[in-house]
Structures are given as C-alpha cells and as structure tokens.
View 1 (cartoon, helix red, strand yellow):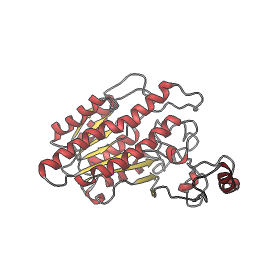
View 2 (cartoon, rainbow, N blue to C red):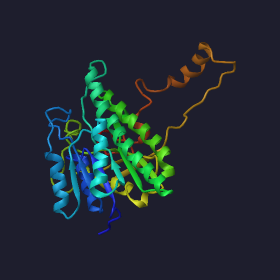
View 3 (tube, rainbow, N blue to C red):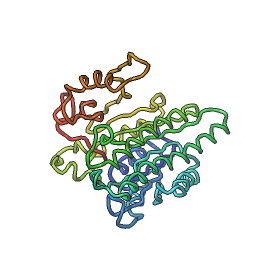
View 4 (tube, rainbow, N blue to C red):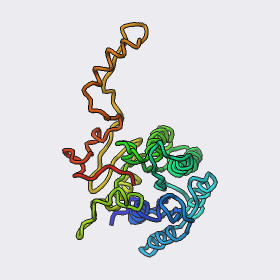
Length: 325
C-alpha cells in the first residue's frame, strides 16, 4: 500500500463524524499520525452539550487499524484551545505537517429572520475556527523555517462550500463564513509559500448530518457506494496533504461523487470606461442598464451556472443540488 504521508503528523478538526472522520481515516491510511479533533456537540447547530465520544471513537478506529492517533475535544473557535491543539500535536508526535480544517455548525435562517447569535455562532465556529488553528500552525512552520534556514513541509486544507459559490438563500451566515474561508486560504497561501507551506480549499458535497435535510430527496443506493458518501471527498484531502501536491497552492476545488473541479478565480466579464473625467448617473444608466436588460430576473453574481453544477446542467451534477457539507 502506498503511504506518502508516512512519518508526518496531521490535525483534522471536526473529525468525529462525517467528512472529518473520513478525512482522518484516509490520512491515517496514507501513513500519517492523526490528531482527531471534535468538540462532540450533540446537535449540528453546536448545542446539546459536548462529548469526547466522537473523537475518541475515531482515534480508536485508527489505532485498531495499526495507525497512530490522539483524540482532542477542544473548541477550535476558542483561541486558547486552538493553541493547545497545535501544541498537543507537536508534543505527542514531535511536529505538525498537515492541518485539515473541517469543523463547523449550521444555524440556518433567512437573512430577515436571523438573530445576532445565529450569525455570530456560525461565523465563530467556521471562520474564526479556521483562523485560530491556521494561526498557530503557521507560526510553528515559520519558526521551524527560521531555525533551519530553509523550507519546511506544511499543508493546509480548508473547507468551504458550494453555498458560497452558488448562493444559498437560507444560509447567509454559512455562505458568508465559507466565502471568508476562501479569502483566508488565498491570503495564507501567499504568506506561507516562502516557507514551503501550501494552503488550499475544497468545496465538498457529501451526505452528513450537516446536509441531511438538503439531500433528503436523494436516497442512497441499495448497493454500491453512495455518490454522496464522504469517502469520495477524503482521497482529495489526502492528495493535497501529500508531497505530490507541492505545486498546488491557493487553489479552490469542488469535489464529490468521483468528480474534482478546479475553480478559476473570477474574471472580468465586461468593462466600461467613462468618456468624461468621471462617471455621471446618466452615463452609467446608458451603459449598464442595457448590459443587464437581457439577463433573467433574479440572476445573481454567485450563480450556480458558473460552475456548470446546477440541476440538470450539461456536464454537471446529474440533478444533485449544490450544498455545503
């Protein structure tokens, strides 16, 4: 069996269930020692009390298969807990080489009904949680690079969502957090490249407790692997964490059901120049109103069509709606 991650240490957040669990198992299968982080909240909204059970179960599963694993139940959205998570990985396994940020919660509501707490809690867990762990992992790699005088090995794989790419009307908090994660990733990729560290972001589509409502109408097949199984996503995470992906940095990839799509940065679709020192209202009206006149009502900048993944699109997803994890 190929073990490209042999001798490396990984942290996977939100690894007690669903995608995080599949990713932790894949990294271990590829040879990495894995710190399995999961707060263990009973509900997918982050409420209902914490539990060490999910993280401990996955760590035990890895050890039973002959791998090395440590369970960690801290809240990655807490700055001190994230520091302790990174420090714990270094203390237990002698270093840190891979960080997979996956932890998240859902508190869905239309924007006109959303409470301040529903907004703050989702931004806190997703976006701040990604930042916290990245901040301490990045500091560790920078210190190592300075000490050795050369590049080090470091891989960050962050988790965004098609809710950011294609829009999600009932998830303004989630979509905003996932968009922020893309910005965090590209900034981190530029900042850490000189140290030998890469940072990439994936938009996975999988059937987990986070998406059980979204995919309720798409039953798993009675035989064979579910097209929405998290196991379709995990191999890409393993690859991005490996030495083979050294030239992949600051990239956004959509992954699900045996498909990986590399997403380009936004391109300028049209450009208008003023014939005066600056635009006037009348000039903008004359230029922009006709430009948008033929577009369908309600079409947004964040349209699913840009990915070719809308329902029934040619070369698209075969009718599965875009969704977050």
